[in-house]
Picture 1: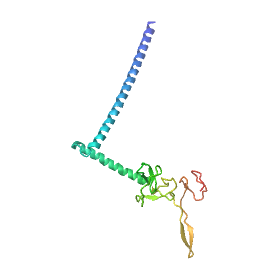
Picture 2: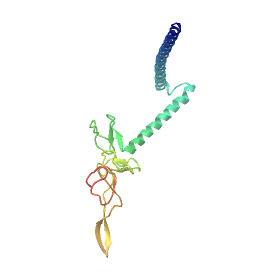
Picture 3: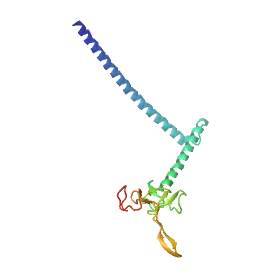
Picture 4: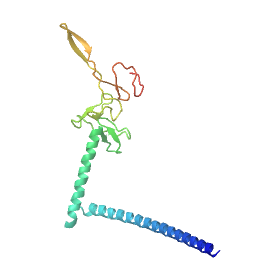
Length: 199
């Protein structure tokens, strides 16, 4: 019986050591998590200190900070330019009163009703006017980003000379697209093969 008693004691000791090790690892992980949380808070406070410093002393700071402050100003200017480019691509402008996105060329804000500044011309050469709602959309877009309708223009009647007579004939499109989902369809299809809409 002495052998089995020794074996049982060894197994019990090993189990206790394993349990103790697991508890230690769990406690270390918990403490490391607390340290990480505090480091994150410290970094956030440093960020706030830096932002406050720039807002107060940005134009009149010591020489060692001047380069970093200039970099921040340059990056903020670049971001303002990028945001304007996004507005042009989407064909939108922001309401000065409430900040809502409003389609370019619309007279009033759809969120607060404030009058929008009049746009006499397209914001850039990269956009075209939606034939349905009049919003400006980036050229090459298949759907209007304001109203969602297809940007495909209807076929235009073209005069055709037949045996010295001018006859109005609708120019046949080489490709057809579904007006509901924009999928490419065959010339003889009566229904869209993608969404099932009647053509």
